[in-house]
Length: 393
Image 1: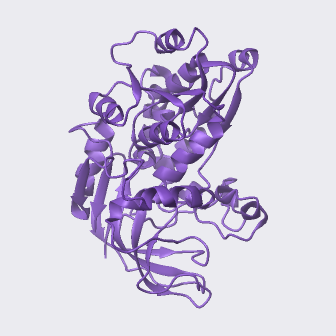
Image 2: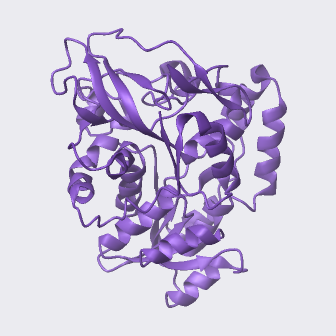
Image 3: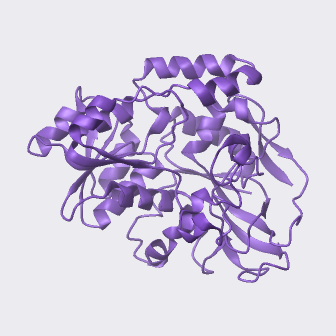
């Protein structure tokens, strides 16, 4: 089969790889019909090379059709249309019982001290072949796959794999009070959907980005925006809009991709040039991120407010502004999305023909799988108006 494979920094290729096969009685094989490039994939493209292997299959946002199931898989069968959550969870361990599916004790990658395994995402998360491919082996398929209706296009459902539950969790973790306000930093796919979800739930949303196409997309959905490319002091601008206090909550949907962080950028660049044997322990013990977005979040949130972090960070020695956080009494929540925890709330919205979250207005590029390298390039460089790239095997 054809699959998108990793070969080094900014080097992804579409190659022939062996077809997946059932290995365990709770496996399934899914033929992928649509898959997406995630902002997290850009970390593999740019920063997290020390934890990748040559030829690793990428991707963790797929929808497709079940081809084959093991004998322990009973809730889906061949021919069913399914979305595959990006995290792999069993549904029956202690953590899954608490609905903390991203911390599943059955699939935790204990060799690296990490949480549940993820599709297509480094040795740290199990090095499980990903979904930017023609076919995908799905472990723990007795629980993970989400059946979706026949008929509507894949675009209505593919975001249930990651974007929508991550965004819903970001809003839930932000703990916005009734009638309250939230600032969303970053208008990539997660920031776009976090903004729309918060507005759908009745909150005032102020979104911040410096890319014109992303600002325009947010405006189309009634989101109040601040253009960071022309605003000298974003937190001050938000305080001016909120009676001098700042918003009740902030969502950091940027993470370690933040611009305006020269020390973090230098650290990422230097680490990426080192041999893997040196770079990997350096990143896991002393990594420094690009914290510009997080620092702005701390300055923006009102005293006693909440910051919800959905953007991925990878450092272990980040210079957190602890004095400021403590003095302001800020609550901080973060983590990988517990995908299946939020599906019951999201499914009625994506099956509603009125499309209340605008899922049909998120993808800016729809490409055949063979053009995945081009998709990665324009997404990483924010070229050609790229906000979300979908791939069709």
